[in-house]
Length: 138
Image (tube, rainbow, N blue to C red):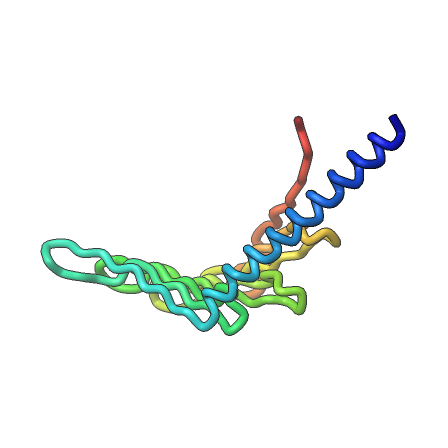
């Protein structure tokens, strides 16, 4: 019985490690495809074409700028900054006149999950704090 238990545990551990490695490869492949990429989404109405959305990725494949447009022009633009671990640590949100509307600063737990998000007004005054709580309810 102990031999069967050890064998089953070893097999489970092997499958877990292989699956974890496959997930990491999928993430790196995804970022690999997006290196220095700009994606533009266009809408057409009455045979006229206008820009709807634009996303820009950096050399690491991370989203650094996302712009949303309407028929009259820019609606909102979000510029993201990343820390040394590759996590989004700051987002600056611009309005339709390309002026800062809000600033988000993000903190993470040691395991990489989001801890909290601080929302600031353009003048630097704290507007609100969003706290993330995780529970594993099965």
